[in-house]
Image 1 (tube, rainbow, N blue to C red):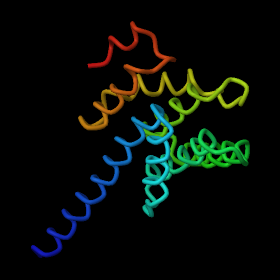
Image 2: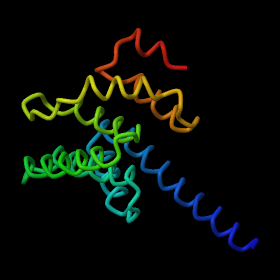
Image 3: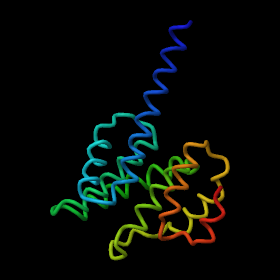
Length: 158
C-alpha cells in the first residue's frame, strides 16, 4: 500500500514539475529567439496527453513560425487548429484560455487569429478565483504584462 501511495505521489510530483517547467519556459518564450527555441524544445519533448500540455505544444507549433523562414503559415494554422480543438473539447480549462489569449494578442493582426480575445479575457476573470495558488500566480504574471487587459482589470486580481 505504501508503495502505491509513494508511486502516485512521485508521479504527480513529476507531472507538476514538467508543467511548471513548461509554464516557466512559455512565460519567457516571447523575449528572444533563443527563449522561443528553448520553449519549443521543451514542449516537443513532452509526451503527456494532458490537455494543458497539449495546449502548450500547440503554442509551440505557432511560435515555431516566429523563428523559421519556411512554412510559417502552415505552422500557425496547424497550431491554431490544435489549440481550438483542445479548447472545444475542454472548454472549462482556464489555462488553455490563457494560452490562446497570449497567442492571439501577440500574433500580427494580419494573421487573422484574434477572434477570441474578449471571450478569453472574460473567461479568465470569471474563473480566476476558483484556481489553485500556483495557477493564480501564473495567470497574474501573464495578466500583468498583457496588452489586452486594462490597468483597472489588472488591479482586480488578488
